[in-house]
Image 1 (cartoon, rainbow, N blue to C red):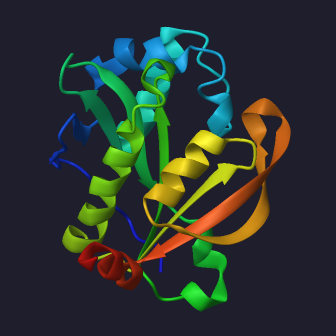
Image 2: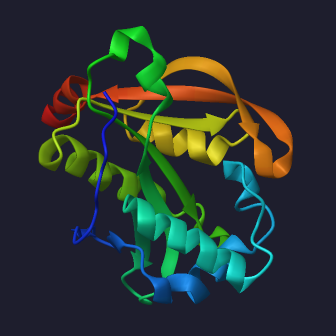
Length: 192
């Protein structure tokens, strides 16, 4: 069943990060990483060409109310986003009737390779299952995006299927891999 997530007022603290709803005044920080070639393209969108484009994306996130800004606790700067979106799994018969969200994320290139996204996703998984009561989380990555694959695997997601992703902004179709994580699997993993 479609699940609408409203993150208004939600704050998640991790050892190195604060996840909070994105705000209008995050535009400069978001533009700083979203304008770097290769960052958005790894997720299927064109890197931002102007601060106005960034402001429009933030306005969309604000309307949807389902995207966290990822803030570096040391600098106070927004270094990425993590959203909880409608999932492809809603179309899969075996998941009908479940409360599901798709995890999507992007991180500033300057912060790649430090385990920060794994830290953020791990805490969001806990929030989704323990606070929101979701049944299933899904996530995906383009086949060539090994950084994202490693985050997904470290967070306990299980491979579900290979698929195609049409990135309209890039006018390109990517081979991608889709993964799932059930609340039961997460609970078992947490107990170990």
